[in-house]
Length: 165
Image (cartoon, rainbow, N blue to C red):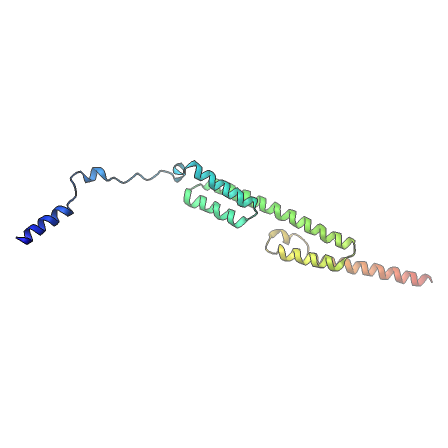
């Protein structure tokens, strides 16, 4: 008797309602993740990417772009943003290299050879991983060549002056 009562009680508890299938339906999968992304979220992500670009944090900007493509499926926009990041980064490096090279040139014109050599070494170390630096001649060697050229000119002038006496 207890067995019958227990099985009846347990059987009713585990039984599903007759209309269960009508209440529980899976939501249809979105046809494209791009159409389902809320506009404020997209705009926040775009602003975050632009902020990282403005802060010159190239790796963070690229990581956000990669997430945009992977999570939301914005491949074309991600490709466009990657090109923008690369372009701005290259321009930034070109500008920094030009400014630093001008400092080296100024030191060389003033015949401040040690300062010129130190600045050239700093530039070479700072931009060692950049493709831009490969296009620049070895600044340290250039400083040394110009120093030696100046030294030779001074020695020649001194020799000429001694010859006239």
